[in-house]
Length: 155
Image (cartoon, rainbow, N blue to C red; front, side, top):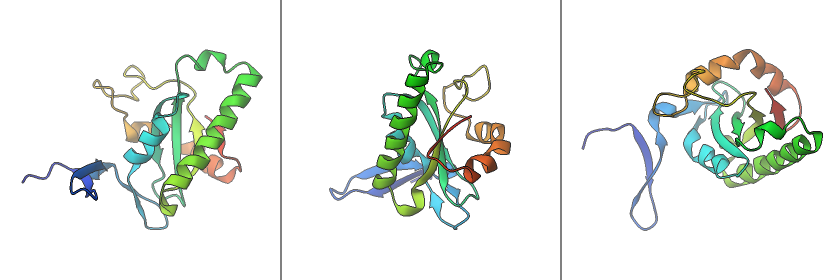
C-alpha cells in the first residue's frame, strides 16, 4: 500500500481512524510530537470559532490561534461581548485540555486580528490554512504571549 502521509490509529472495533497528517506534526521543546488536527477539530466545533491553528514548534507547550465566527467579529468593539468571548474561550481551553494528553495541552488561545483568507495569504486556494505563513506572521509576538499570564490573548 502506498504511503499517503496520513496518520491514524486502529479503533477498538478494528477500523482505522485518521488522526492527522504526518507533515503537520510538530515537536515541543519537551521533545513530544503533537498532532494538531484532532485538537483543531475540537476547537472548530465551538460556535464562536470559524478556523483554528494549533502550533508550538520548540515551545514548552502548544498554543492555538483562532479566527472568530463571522457574525461575532463586528461586535468585538462592545466590551461586554469581548468579555463574553474571553470567558467562553477560557472555558473552551480548559475543556480541550481536559480531553487531550498532557503533552498536547494548550498554553493559550490567541484570537486573530483579522480573518484568514486566500487574499491575505493565510489560506490556500482550496481553503486550507497555511500553517507556516500564519506562524511566521505572529512569530515576533509569540514570546510575549508565552511570557504573559492568562488563557486568552488578542493578536
